[in-house]
Amino acid sequence: MEHVGKDELIFEQGGVARCAYALAAGSIRIVQTGGDGRQVIIRFVAQGEMFGTVPLFTDHLFPADAIAAEPSLIFLWSEADFLALIDRYPRLSVNVVRIIGACLAEAQDRIRELSTQRAERRIAHAVLRLASKAERNAEGNMAIDIPLRRKDLAEVSGTTLHTASRTLAAWQKAGLLVSHEQRLVIHDLPAIGRISEDVDR
Image (tube, rainbow, N blue to C red; front, side, top):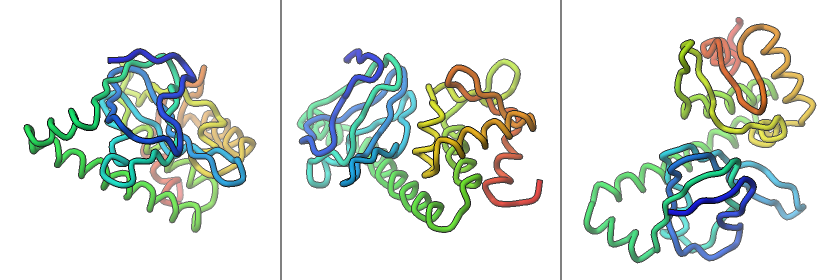
């Protein structure tokens, strides 16, 4: 078990993968840097999720950085220990396959969204993905308990900071959500779902 501070690098793009990771508490940003130096958030890791495991079964090179979005607690296993766990508990291998499949499916969805959808729909899809990992608060609203800068939302949805800020402000004015201190609380998840599908509200 290891404690990491906010903005601390857990592993870096191009580094050799020697461990598997799971997030016990906090949140992690997975960030990829392109050839032009531009950084893009690939996804957020939520509490209870494994990450950094795919390279152990491919080329052993991390395709992106993992950065703590807030003080976090992670479990890590050496490659040998992780493979031994899989041998001992075959069900774990099924979970790894599910993780790989989910990552591939999300990547395909995002490529399609970037190619075919306007910015508001892409932002809605990004919020829905985050909401799928969230829990309802005492008021029954969906609280996304991940530090989410508007810059982060812009990157993960492939749009500009101005567009992401303008969209969130419009949704907040319409009562769909509240954005406060880098946290989102969704009041009307079905409405955001309709935006993602481009259905009249």
